[in-house]
Image (cartoon, rainbow, N blue to C red; front, side):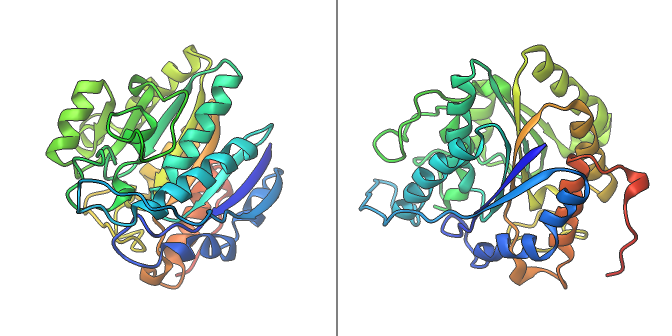
Length: 306
């Protein structure tokens, strides 16, 4: 497969500094080498640089860095559209606000190919706030609402000609959902498999059902992997830790099943904060998970010492 690596060092959408170092940490942990060893053709596109922010004002005074995130969204939408031309883009973040841009560019590409874009959101949080409902003001909590056409972004974020149908979104591993998000998710028909559902039914049957929906629609599948999808005991390098996340084997199983499906066309790796890591432990795990997504199997995995 042709892979294009894109750095997106966004940290304006998070409450803690450090995510801007995420792309460098993933490169240092060997992401390009791992993909090359699997036989993929890899091109590192470097790092996206946003335009100078323009003044953007909103009635919600809690919102932080709105002009900066709008600028990042514009730049990343263009970068995602370009990188998805005949290749699989892998976006290295950066906080999860980057997905507002990547999803906007990818859904544009899918529409041009007359295909539907599906999204698997591997995250402890649904990131389904609007600009009005966000009480923290941290804009890494809005990208999925924006890209799926929730109201209230008009005149602030870039317009999206084609939005993502909420019924083609699956949030997997959620365990921290605000009331406003809960109501919006139910109203708009988003599939949510929280950690209780995964505990009760297992990751495989739930994911298998979603993969079958993508396959039946001849869809393109974007995977957005947030570090806090994983349990903080195995992935400490994130500023939004929530106990009770996916285990090492659950995470690899998800990636291996996605690889088997052959449906994944793009990937975000977000919220890696190397400042909070332990000797690169989380960055190396993310590289291993990406390798599983791209074809490495359990029998091929090297032994590591931390």
